[in-house]
Image (cartoon, helix red, strand yellow):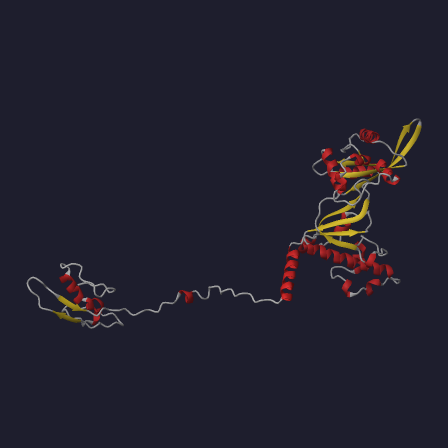
Length: 395
């Protein structure tokens, strides 16, 4: 009779299966240790190494013709328990440790940690990639600033992106304030340190009475890339006689901002001109006498006929028209105002024009041809002469 191991008192499934169950039950030991051909279970050939046959005891009661009762007591084979590693121990080296609860901080430590977190987040998102230098000469060019930037290929990320000078939005007078934008705040910091160092070298050279100033330069102002004489020679931003407040150049960091108000005016004129590839802007200033925009355009057209090639320029824009434009274009993000009651202010507006050229090459040819040119015209029987000054505007 087959009895499942997990149910020792189970009865036979059917009376028909009883003889077969007796046969299987009597050979349960041989199933594990094997049996020989003679029927004994002493054959070691079929024995499983490391296992011994369990002892069995069988008791049989008399049977009758109608009923057969068989009682078999079998000691079932229990396999040894294998020591399997626990899942927790098996993956212990890859398992993350439990997060411990943070230790309680004192009140002043908690305040210090919060302050440090705010400073870190502020510096991490910092966009102070612009250096604003004030009080310099208004005649400087962007090349004067780029000349001092890093020249090594490995320092390409420390170069200057753009240089723009602030101008009065109505008269377009240069104001000597420059915006120098960089690719990172670190590059702006390095450039400011170099400006201060070169300016101090220029001051040492000016104060030297013997001309042997290079020998007395302290080690903190020297650079392994060049000699002090070479560095002072390329420094053209400010002379050594310049005495700013505090003895240093007035430079400060700022976020990358939008365009100056005068740049928005120039953008409007460029859109009106129709030159979209690489336009350039030229400022014209009339001395001794004022002429109208129509007369100035007539002089330009006549000169184009003489040279058998018309000038690729737009019509002159009279700066006096700025007072009639949308004033929000000039006053937005700007602290300067139009001095309409000032005579010098109105004189500048009356004598200045802006023209847009097709390209920088055309602009420079126009400047070479028209700068300091004398324009002669007859007004009511009198000859009036006007001297024209042309200058390039970096946009």
